[in-house]
Amino acid sequence: MGASNSQFTEAELEDYQELTYFSKKEILHAFKRFHLLDPDAVRQDRNVRLPMNTILELSELKVNPFNDRICKVFSSSNDGDLTFEDFLDMMSVFSDNAPKGVKAEYAFRIYDFNEDDFIDSADLKEVVGRLTGDQSLTDEDMQQLIDNIFEEADLDDDESLSFAEFEHVISKAPDFVNSFRFRL
Image 1 (tube, rainbow, N blue to C red):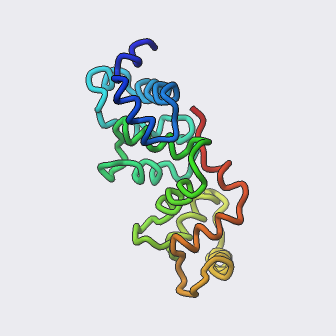
Image 2: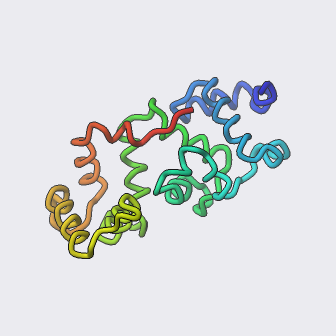
């Protein structure tokens, strides 16, 4: 798609490269993927805000149980609709080049459904519910699982996880980085 090269000045590409974990080539590829989501809208205005339901057509998001939360966390308008810059940020954080700490920060925000800067039992119920899908747990099993999570991770016994506690748990999970990525 030769047209995408002319979409950005060299200075813009350098800025995007400085602000992401991508090379210029990867930035152009990310733009191509964004463009393919709604070619007419992006052709008319490369700064268009694509609606969340369009973004959710991305193959990596279609099957992700947290797809709506991912869009909302990366949306500069907080409604799940994404501009190219929002999309680029999302793709960058989910890239292999993003540091584990950055991935942990965004995972925390995605799992913090009530957006109170803590992951509490209501957030954990939502996380577990989305992960188990049709295989829902009994109320008793759900509570036991949440109790076990807090027993392991809640270092200050306040029945919620701060980012520091979440990050500590993630540091023990070597597969975390592999499960928190997209391929360009």
